Length: 112
Image (cartoon, rainbow, N blue to C red; front, side, top):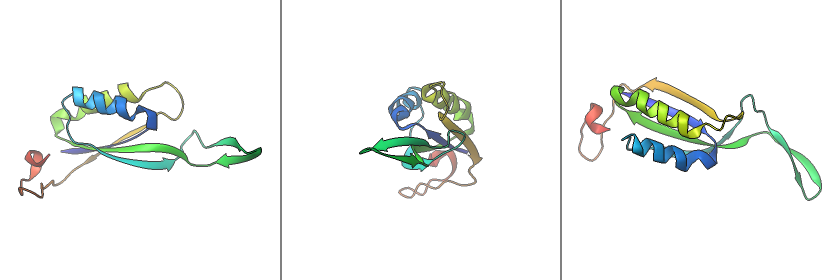
């Protein structure tokens, strides 16, 4: 089992959700986050005053998948989230040692 953590642009969330759903991936956790990478920040104008926005709004997705769904899920995320511009985001994959469904007590891939 793997945990996919993806950081994407907020306006791409619905596209990514649809792509994952079409790929047969169920279950996703979404968190609104702020951060920056190579994109750094940017300068904005508010009521005539210029100020620097250091952290940009992003969306963090967490998706637990079985090994056989990993490549399909990653491909769906990358295709749906890609704009071709800086700041599109990143995908991280980590190993899940154990998953337990609280309601039924199921463990492992059955709990996903």
